[in-house]
Image (cartoon, rainbow, N blue to C red; front, side):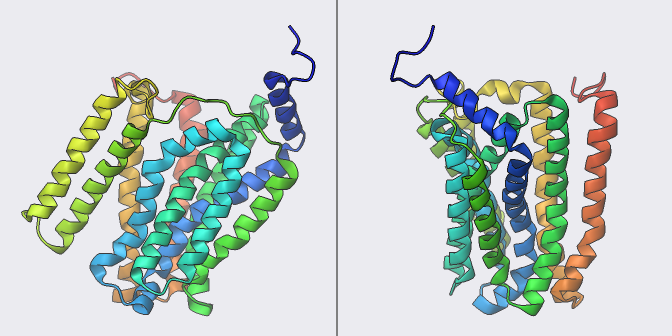
Amino acid sequence: MSAPTGQRNPDKVTGDNELANHDRRWWILAVLGIAQLMVILDNTIVNIALPSAQHSLAFSNADRQWIVTAYSLAFGSLLLLGGRIGDMIGRKRTLLIGLIGFAGASAVGGEAINFTMLVLARTVQGAFGALLAPSVLALLTTTFTNPSERGRAFGIYGAIAGGGGALGLLLGGILTTYASWRWTLFVNLIFAAVATTGALLWLKNDEPADHDPLDIPGLLLVSLGLFGIVYGFSHAETTAWSNPYTIGFLVIGVVLLAAFALFETRAPYPLLPPRVVRNRTRGGSMLTMLIASAGLFGIFLFLTYYLQETLGFSPVKTGIAFLPMVAALVATAQVSNRILLPRFGPIQDGFLR
């Protein structure tokens, strides 16, 4: 049945927009790659600059971890919300808001005059990164509709994600040595400007795919729960595991996360539908990524300080010293995705059963 005269047919509009995006798909891939590179690069480039930033702003050893943690905590706890917002207002709009917000927060962080200002800027960066990342993946999926081309596109996307970590280490060392640690944040403005221009030129507006209300109680429970656990571990480092505040924050964090898990089973529009984590393959993969990511973040932070403060490496030499580890991670991912996964699949008898 055709749409009434004078009214838009949403399905036709969405189809026309997807077709237009498909015609420009390789240019769009370049835009999405730059946006993703900015987010990935920011995870490593700031680590190399941390010792210099600490000396410049004179914050304590106990405080320095919050430069990394503030970003990660905001990004992780708001990632599900970012995906929902993209469904509600359209992925192109979400991408543009994320790019502009990330760039603005980076500018504020680069101009930071004290520790508090830098941490707040990193927190806002993480929040806009959580808005940006889901829209990049969604646009990549809807733009490349041909299975073979989609595989190539995701291969390029994965290479950018892996190479971005190495580039961040090198670029962070170069900028910190020859310019200032502040340029490890200012450089995001260049990436954001290029990606924003490309998105405005080549991406068509897409229709919202979801009008369900946001799960505000679930968002508050998971965000406060994660903060309680992270702050509890941080407080233990400066005091003791037996400290009442350490115990209190850890207990509150666990209780809030348990309440979140229970609430999501009853929420009419859950932020994290229980079926997502109950799936054996998906749930096992998420647990594995959680453990691996926690280890990598710790290694990048503490090894950076060990190389620069204990061994006396320059920022550039520190970045180069990290390259073998990054190369091994990229090689492992490529072997897993291109050889092991197609041959054996995600689950075999005896694993995750």
